[in-house]
Length: 106
Image (cartoon, rainbow, N blue to C red; front, side):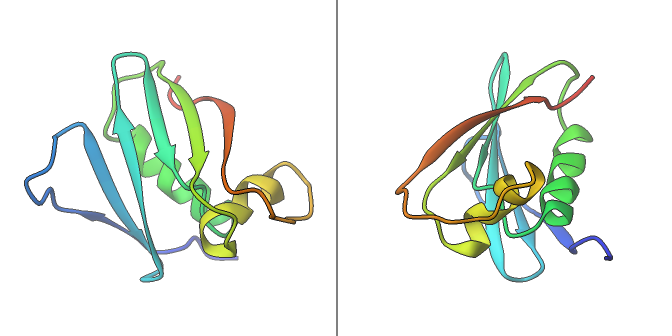
């Protein structure tokens, strides 16, 4: 499967530590860069879309930050990729979940 198209959205005046990405013209996700972490808001709809956004984040942050993924809700376009990446069937009745998905940069 081809990677999902990702557009790094220009900063519209918000805090420079917030990176915004539009994926497949379907959903916008955000990465918040802190001293030790990158917080990914929503894990998207497929492993390839998630990988594409993580690659885009890796290109824009310093190495060795831990990734924290926060799913805001269980709709397929926001949360299914993390379950699929872990080999699980997306279910989704939770309102939100937090997962430490490992190092974002090495």
